[in-house]
Length: 296
Ligand code: R5P
Image (cartoon, rainbow, N blue to C red; front, top):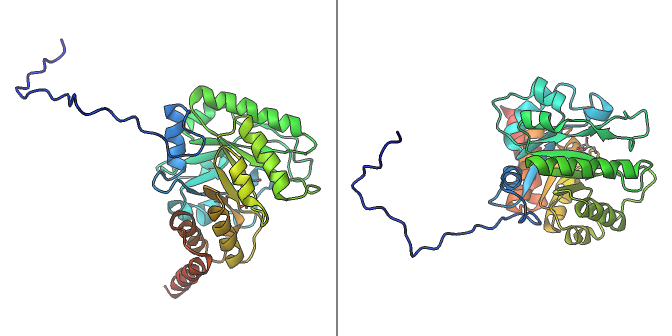
């Protein structure tokens, strides 16, 4: 028999205080279910509405990329400074300490290596395995204009359907073929198609002209992709511009883990994303953290 409520204190129902119906801070996510919102709120910091994702999934098509040869030695020490990790299930299971509570955005597409046509991908993770690994989102490449455009779009819509069934958001990554022009017109098209067909957030490249039109016309959050390694100040400036022009975070890989001082770099990026630090100040911070490390 259940224990009787024996307290002598008067029950308090606060009848005159209406119960709040909290909204949700993230663009385009207000109508999602609780589990989806909760997972997104682990990726995007609810205080700033932004995220610094560390992308280390490159091995899924190009093997041991420079800087990722030993994820246990080079990447695990960076984990505390990222808001979320983007990686494959193989690296998660073999190399990421299970005691880490960092949200995982799991690469869910694959197939071709750098030796073949990259757009010929398929879904590469079962939704049940994603649940077993307690992931916060699934990431999939979408090749708008690519040879296997339709297949990659269908991969994404199938993943969205599976994700919706279990409350797992989907990150669409706009992949650019060598022959495509990387301009705002192309990325507006790619990002909008991903969002219209159900992606919960989109990872795409920064362009110097018209990036704000990409963020404005995409009804879900955009996180900026890092791209190939460029000089530190240029990478910090690119992140700053993207954030000021409406990106709700960054998902950077090589510009962090191929940097001379990866911890200094991710901390500088974090200040840009969450504190609107200007690129010159962030560069100074990077230099001082880097020099401090040297002097230790
Ligand atoms: C491919 O498009 C992937 O998602 C990458 O493996 C990765 O996320 C790229 O990161 P970054 O360009 O910043 O090195």
